[in-house]
Length: 172
Image (cartoon, rainbow, N blue to C red; front, side):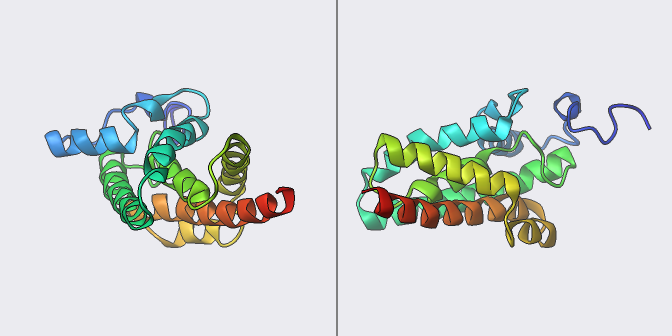
C-alpha cells in the first residue's frame, strides 16, 4: 500500500471519483464552503468559523423564518455532503465542512447573541464534535452518506446549545 492510500493527510490531493457537471460542482462548493474545507490545518475548526456569520444572518430573522432557514440549511448540507461522499469515495471527507457550519448554527441558535455566548458556543461545539460524546460516534457509524456526515454535527450542536444555555444561566 502506498503512503497516499488510506491517508487523510493526502486526501486533498486525490482526484474526485467522477464529475457530473454543474450539480456536482455546486454540491462540492456547498460541501466545502467554497473551498474552505481544503484548509490544510484543522478544516473542521475553520469550517466552524463560517457558522458564525451564518448564525448572525439567521439571528436577525423572526423565530419562524429562522427555524425554517435552519431546516433548509440542514437539508442542503445533507444533500451536498451526500454528493461529496459519492464524488470523493470517502465516508466522511475532511474537506466537507458544511456539517460544521450547520452544527455551530444549532449550537448558537436561540441564545442571546454576544461575544461571550459565541465564544463559549464555539468552544462547546468543537469539544462535542471532536470528542464524539455518546451517542455521536454511534450515530456517525450507524448512518451512511450525507446524513451520517451531518447528523453527528447536528447532535453536537444540540449538546453545545443545551450546555451553553446552562452556562449562560449560571453566568448571567
